[in-house]
Length: 130
Image (cartoon, rainbow, N blue to C red):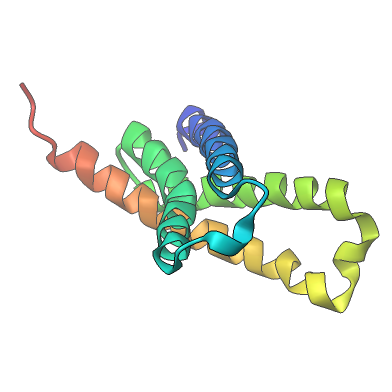
């Protein structure tokens, strides 16, 4: 297990998430009523990339067992995300409208980061050497 790759992937998630949050805040601003329809699609894709890129980084650095490294990165991402959610909404997280986050965030994070880890491993294995 390449723990350095996993923690670099976790750091990449934190950077990607902060950039995504700032981009969303700057783009939408105070008036969210005049947002074009395609804007939501673009931000959904960018939101997916926020989870794929950390796994990709972990898989690329590890260069073997990329899916596993990505999935472990995703589980650590889920822990960080759930802690941030808990810090902001507290025990309301246990209410029915938030409860699905407790199991969906780890599943989503592990899947998307694992996918990114597999892509990173493939890129490390088949990249052209100079």
